[in-house]
Length: 407
Image: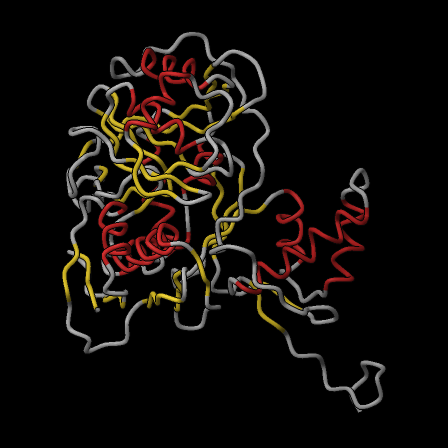
């Protein structure tokens, strides 16, 4: 059967099976869908194959998975379609929870515990706007709820306390071997299209041990963590960065260092019990954060660039934020953060250069870094920059005898 989610024009082909449809309704718990005409090609197709479900999308490998993972994939594709159809909206890849009337945002950081912390705050009675995606309203940049249930990775972390584990058991919804969706109590999940003002951004630094504490986070680190190319494809990238600056300039930014989940939740509740936040003594510097490649949809597209001379795409703009460098293409398709070696490579690419030459120059510029590491970084940067359209190939001079001298 063909369905479409409310507020989007894209249709999805799904099996007309109660098992799958009930799972999809539980995942998109307050985002209704209805049967739709099959006039256009579906955004994605889900097929029943034996005991599993196959996800078929144009240009992508067919994946076989569980009903829960298939429903999750459908919702992800619908969110992308929703953002593509509303290009003037910003959209953050983050968890979002209302604490004392304002949204506290937890940007997506790999295995930092974002979704678990969001669920833990729900267990304390706070209203969740989402655990993964937060669109902003066009008029006032308030957060907008999509009505999607939060999802936990299984098994729960060791630092999950007994009370939280009981909450998860009581609210258990669809699950498979990897993920569990929660059916939250009435009032714990913000109704679809609800709005709330933004309050603060909190980066997460989960540690093996130690007390929960907050430190100030730089604007550049926050920017790296919040931007996701997938959720802003149609907006000009330069305009997107400028708008992000304006939004973040009015928000306090912190890093939460924590090991115990209950302790982290209590600290957040105490900190944001009033606005502006009641902050004790904060550390002045961020902990080391991994470089985030915010231009890619997933793994960078590999390109064979050995021996190819490349240079900067003249349409790309360089933006500096708190000493950090970001590239933004003029057509609104990508944004990329540059680390130190990346910034050095970008400067070299003002003139045509190939990978081997770049490695030689950068090894001299960064003598403390092992050559193999520089070579790996240069290779990955060339691939990522080429895939994002930030650099372009240059034609070699006319050469008939292999010497570089025109005949």
